[in-house]
Amino acid sequence: MQYAAQHTGTGQPMIAPSILSADFARLADEIDRVAGSDWLHVDVMDAHFVPNLTIGEPVVKSIRAATDIPLDCHLMISDPDRWAPGYATLGAHNVTFHVEAAGDPVQTARAIRAEGAKAGLALKPGTALEDYREVLTEFDTLLIMTVEPGFGGQAFIDAMIDKIAAARRAVDSGHLNLLVEVDGGVNAATIERAAAAGADCFVAGSAVYGADDPAQAVRALREQAAAAS
Ligand code: DX5
Ligand code: ZN
Image (cartoon, rainbow, N blue to C red; front, side, top):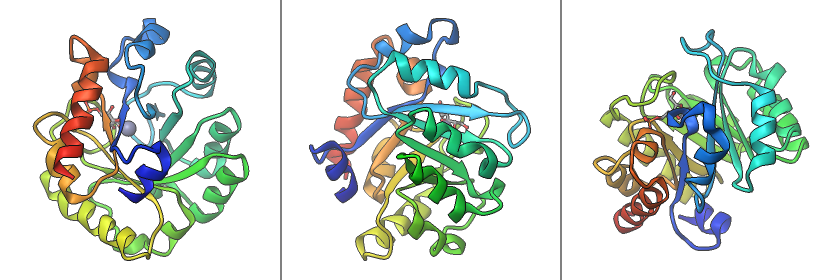
């Protein structure tokens, strides 16, 4: 919990609601419904790297102006080397891109950081952590996908628990200094396993926006994670 404690000042696990499960026609209101969240997770998809299409820079820019919650942009796009730094320029707090799509992840991380944002690297479920240990020394965030990227509402892949635990060990042993974030299928039934394995930050889309009171769902998930970690 070192990094999360530094980030939030509370030592609490971080919850990042994903607006992928929100009503896109009422986005500002939907963001208000998750007041008190640590990060707001914004899924950018290009119908190329993943078989789904969401939003891009103009909408992220408007979201940035509509909320004080730090934006956690998850870029599921081809050619992040070209596009990722732009999300940092427009004020995202954390910009995460996929290593599977990147040509030069270290250079892209440096470009994101040069614009004042944190840099994150995302790994699809089939991508091994071991292959990127050196690269990850240049990053602030590691996003471990616990579903295949592209859609909300999928089931948490339990086999990813080992990857979360390996990332935790790498941080605790001092090899890496980054926040361990998990994304996909995180809900009341799965968050404790992910927290016990050592995740710091939890993305939740359907579990938050599918609740009658999304802000309460965020608090409940945070409490569950805190109790399990
Ligand atoms: C999926 C996205 C996730 C998605 C998670 O590719 O990266 O952020 O919104 O949704 P849930 O929490 O419903 O699995
Ligand atoms: Zn995401």
